Image (cartoon, rainbow, N blue to C red; front, side):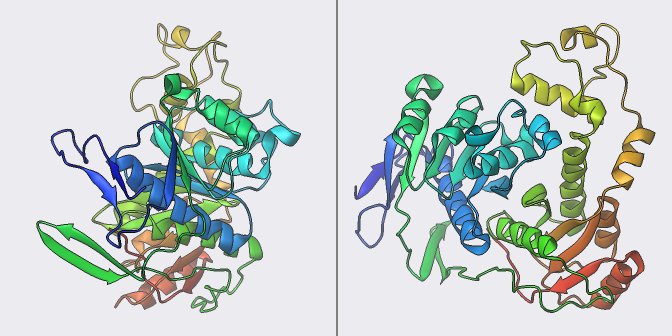
Amino acid sequence: MKEYQLKYGCNPNQGNAKLYMSSGKDLPFTILNGNPGYINFLDALNGWQLVSELARALDYPAATSFKHVSPTSAAIGLPLNDSLKKACFVSDLSGPDLSPLACAYARARGADRLSSFGDFIALSEPCDLATAKLIRYQVSDGIIAPGYAPEALNLLKEKKNGKYNIIQIDSSYQPSALEAKEVFGITFMQERNNLEISLDSFSNIVTANKKLPPEAKRDLVVALICLKYTQSNSVAYAYDGQAIGIGAGQQSRIHCTRLAGAKADAWFLRQADKVLNLPFKEDLPTPTRDNVIDAYIHKNQEDCCQEGIWQRYFIKKPEPFSEEEKEAYLKEITGVSCGSDAFFPFPDNIVRAYQSGVSYIAQPGGSIRDQQVIEMCDKLGITMAFTGNRLFHH
C-alpha cells in the first residue's frame, strides 16, 4: 500500500487527509480491521516506538495505552500481585490467562484508567489470546502490534460491532535518519531522536546518596522512555516496572510534577484495602466503577458515600476514605522513581516528588540552580542522576 486515504485530519473540517511515504515506498503497516483515523495513527506510531524501545531496553514484553499523542502509561510484563490484580480488574485470572504480554497491558491500562478510556494500544510482541481477552472488555479505539495470533485477531475483530481498528506494523521497518513536518506551510527538518536509553544511562549520580538498586534503574528506564514519546513539558513517575503517573504537555515543570504525582498517588490509593473492597453492585459497568473510584478517592464530582447517592453504585454504604487515612497511607510509600524530560529549575519539584514516595530521580541537569536541587535531594535522602540528555517531544 503506497497511500492510505483518511476520512479527515485532526478535525472533521480538515479534509484531503492521507498517509504516504515521501520516498514513494510502501507504507510499513497493514490494516487488518477497521478504518483508523489521523489521530489514531499518531497514537499508534508513537506508541509502537515506545513499546519497541522499552522491550529492547529491558528485555520484557511491553505495552502502552496512548491518548492524544501521549502515553497514559506504559509497562513491562512483570507478574501482578493480588492487590494489583484486583485494582486492574483481573483478579479472576492466573496462569496462561495472564501471559507476560497480558500483564504488561493490564498494568498499562490500569495505571490511569480514566485517561485510558478510549485509548489506542501498542504492544511490543504479537498479540496473544490472553491479551486479546483483556482488551475485549475495554473501551478502546484500536491496537497496533507486530502480529496477532489467529484466535486473538478473531476476538478483536468482534469489538465495536466489527469496526475495531487493528493495525499490524512491520517490526523490521526503520525510518530515515531525517524527519520532517510542516507547520503553517513551512517545513521543519531534523535528525530523528535516536537516543538510546538503557540501564547504563544513570552512571552520573550527583547526590550524596549513591544508592540506585537494579529495580530503580529499571523503573527510571520506563519513565524516561515514556517521556521520549510524551508531549513536553513532561514528568513521569514509575514503580514496579510501569509508569504510574505522567504529567504531560504543561508549560510549567512544577505543574508536570504535581500532575504526575497526583496520578501516582491515585494509583497507590486504588490499591488500599478500603478501595479494593468497595461493595460495588455486580452489574455496574467498568467505566462507571472507574469514575466512582475516582470520586471516592478525590471527592471531585460527588460524594458517593452520601445518602441517596451510594445506592446507585453499592450494595451497602461504604465507609468514607478520610483525608487523614489517605495521607497516612501515602506516607508509607517509598521507592518510586521519577524522570523529567528537561532539568528541574527549582527544588520545589523535588519536594513535590518526595511527597509521592520518590526515592530516585533521573533528569538531564543543566539548570543554573542545579546545586539547590541537589541540596534538596540530599536533605530528603533522594538519589539523583544527571543523564545529560533532554527528551523534548513535540
